[in-house]
Image 1: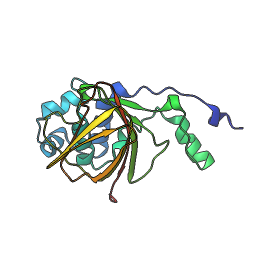
Image 2 (image 1 turned 45 degrees about the vertical axis):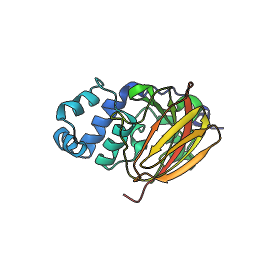
Image 3 (image 1 turned 180 degrees about the horizontal axis):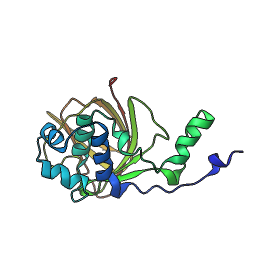
Image 4 (image 1 turned 60 degrees about the vertical axis):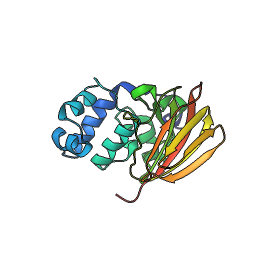
Length: 204
């Protein structure tokens, strides 16, 4: 059996989210001022996010990747994934061990963990953990973004506010909706909420 398949690697990506966003911006040839204008924030705020002074909220992170024209999964695609990439190239499949999963920590303590073991064009597949009282949107209002979202609650309780109604989801519940519909996710329970999400994008 190949040593590649049994290899182990620990990925610590949470503190690098700002640096990764900066790298993605540079790859897209976009200035900080142009990105700031697209997001409706100041260039200083973009700089603080990229330097790790400010942690973006879930909605801000998604807005940034949308503005850059890259999938959410791109935030996790760093050079610290040599094992999964090698397997995908050499063996025709991608394999991600539990300890290899990339995790990013966002505002209010929300964490995202990538579940896709390799690149999956047009699809973002990840797990989110919302601590009690945490929210996906830093401004308290509803937001929208690209794609179509499907989610399943693994544990805890998650509330989703839509423009005209509120839905409370608990373990085992599932929901789907177009991300263009204004919405806001927040944990109204007393324990961490863990959910798995699939976001399907139109061809970019």
